[in-house]
Every structure is written in structure tokens, then in C-alpha cells.
Image (tube, rainbow, N blue to C red; front, top):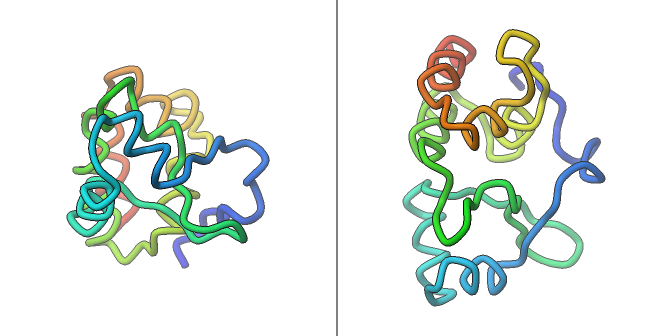
Length: 120
């Protein structure tokens, strides 16, 4: 545990997509979405209704820029997928906002710096 809220406590604030919905938005097959997960380009969580991926991880027909790098930094720092999602959706006053919003606003360098520091 890294001290960030687990997503299960904040799911009402996150829009979730199924794997087929992600595949449709990205214009790829379902098996390719699973490959993106294996390659840590995306992460998802098991919910009652199956595997779900946060909609904010997508920007149009692409994965949010810098997200894969941040996911790698967090995983290297020992974060589980649930902790990583919690970290990405937890407000950070110094950004301001959440790390995922900062990534969506193309402030990847700031987010990577914070991810690296929090993983130490």
C-alpha cells in the first residue's frame, strides 16, 4: 500500500469502459486491448461486471499521452493496478487537480516527476 485511496472507495467518480468499448473507441480488436494491458500501456480493474478500464485513460482514439510511462513508473515502485488507478484519480494540490487530468492536459513531465517521487 502506498497510502493512496483504493479505487473501490471512489468508483462513483470514475467512468468505466468495458474491454469491447475500449476496443471500439481505439478502433482495434479486443485481443489487442488485452495486449495493451499486458504491455502496461493500459490498466484495468475487475469489477462485478467484468474487467473495466477508466474512460479517462483514452483521448479520442488513442491512449492518453504519457500514461504508459506513468504506469510503468508506478508499477516499478510497487503499486498494484488498483493503487495506480487510485493515485491517478487522487487530487494533487501542487498540480492542481488529479494526475490523470494533468496527463490529459499534456503536463506529462510534471506527473512523471511526481510518480517517480511517490514510488521511492
